[in-house]
Length: 553
Image (tube, rainbow, N blue to C red; front, side):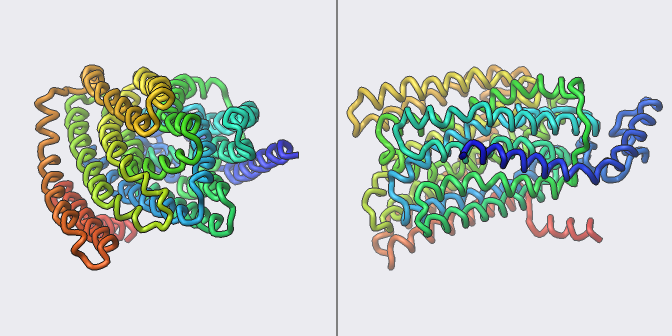
């Protein structure tokens, strides 16, 4: 009965998408005439739109040219997506801290296994054709429709094919009710596949404000769902349902903001290029999610779901800055890198600028987490959560290194080499799985987790040398340029450390010491980030609002 219910739900979802296509038929007919006319005049579809042969809506949706300064575009992306990602991660971390008051460490550990499995599976959504959309220089409407239907069909068929994996994992971990949780989390994959095309159309237009809105609103909705279900006593299900609900908001905002409505058109030949490129991206994305989540599965298997719950809290809190920046890099840097792939000089300058800002935006929030962690977990009456404090410095170091390495895979994908990151992901995933399992199995329990994280950190650091060699195929990169690029950021970071150390040393002398200290550190970090954004990046929220009002007028 449960299997039948899932199948009915997927059929209903596909039917809803079909209904959305009906108001597109007339527009597609006029668009086809415009494309044929453009081909007769030896113009590309984008050129036809700019010359007036297409409609204004199509021009807005399919013209992928970079029409402003690249650094300005990526700065805009850093600003808007940075705000959204930061707010989303703050919401996520705050929600997790609230859930600690209602969930046991065992319930949190069980939910973590289900969520990690679902996230890995979701990485295969649309078979990577979304990133192929961003990398393509020209895009016709018929290609868009064909890829949409391929993505939707692939997502649904793959979900049905891999459903038995849920019961296999339940047998491995011997946890009752784990299979239904995994099935719910795996539903994110077909829904994300359907949302892939409209989302990437928004990215092609560099409409970062819209991305910021949908990401923030959807994250807020998920947080409310998690907290409400936890208060209602749903236990591990509160996390599972809350996490899986994110894609429902995503698909709604994607179609609303993109104005895209799929037509009943499909051609395998039109999909071929996107699928060929997308398979490499999909494999890379899946391996990336494996490397980000395999440690949860290893810790849960060898140390149990109770300790996994403690480790999950430490990792989530410490990785908050890095997770926010991963979204910024993927959504703001990659589209611009793809447009500049043939301009080595401009791409080199932009890459160095990107790395410098990533270093600072990763380090400053990490400082706040490092200084505030003892006080944050000291506020909870359950003493079990204090075990997270010694884990956090190790995770902070891992998150900083991962943030600095994150730009390289996006550079390779933008320059047409999506398979290059795969070797690093295989080594990292294999290293964490094999060496991590050995550490947790053979080293005494009180040292085993720290040994695993230390090996992980050494492994990541060694990747920097290899990335430098590979990146030289596309950009001019030297140790001198890297040092020069990062020097200003590290000076700013050292100044912030000095400011944060004083209240940390004298925190016991403060009234309501824990809460007061946390508030002071938060103010220092917010002011530091604002100062850097305003005076170094030269980005102002008021300036963006004025421009939007002028454009609206």
